[in-house]
Length: 246
Length: 246
Image (cartoon, rainbow over all chains, first blue to last red; front, top):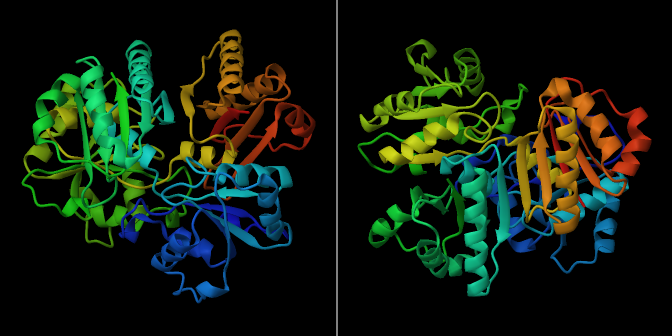
């Protein structure tokens, strides 16, 4: 494994976390092996990072959580500060980067840390773990050879509808699958918009609570969804990934 | 875990595999737990699927590999045949879908199987495992909030260069990260094209041998790559993901 390569410099490990569940059997044993060598973490939230490390089994490898260093970051953190956090790696310590859920640096401020690591010559090691985007795309049955992830949609209703219609038309024309997410408390109005404003033949996958016991993943055309709507579970406040394609 | 939900129907499990390496510590224990319940597999190549299941530890759970059923598929397989393969699920057996490397149904014929499963009402369960795309994107330090995966590039040199310039201009304008792959034996000419034909300020991540001991992941601007080219390892025949952004 890469973290055993001899070098005087520490490395930046990108450590995926759970997607809101408690089942740690979805995490590779490698994560714990790597955590054995890490004393410094850069995280979005210190409390949930500690909780995650406890679940991962950090105590089993003889680590005392209060002796670890946690640097908290958010999207307002000055990039200069990231460079300071990374100094530990230049001094020979490994650093772990943790996201609130899933893969760090995908839809969180972690990308800025990774960028600073490349600039400083700190080796970056991505680890395997849950990615709600990949799991939704795999499970959608739609084209995985060409796809675009849009992140969050515009908040303003009119703009959001136009955006959805534009990307659905693009998917229909090119075959390129379109993925996006929404704040979980806005699932209901988003689903209403999708059912009302996309064309009947457009294919939509709704993937909610991915990897949790309550997981709900279905792909239908909009025409089919309209018929099934009455029997749909309420997805209010349940994290979801949406996939649109043909 | 979802595969314990009571139902008379079998489910389709999407099972990620290794990215060409031998270190099974990057695979979650869940994969083996799920394999305990699976006797039917849909795979790209029977020989390598058997090899993977042996590495995963299938013997530990008392499975005899010669008693498993393997259906082979490729991009020419008639979708009608996929529906026949899925009959086992309707009859109450769980089915595993395996790719040659990484996540099934992302850049392989598996998506057609998943689509047929949705049509037949077979529940689809994506499992956690190595995704070279996600790992490259995480490790690139580029924008992970908006990105596009293009699959393979056009083979014809002139077209390929135009395509690269077009997507790099799009990344520079919108901030949307661009990912693509290339057949490993074409890495050298592709890298030459990238270094020669992209603008000096464009940022490029080359992520080769992801998750292997020989892993090579670096992000520089094209101007920097041109200077470093002499000291670059030879990436001929080493699987790589390319990430372009600003």
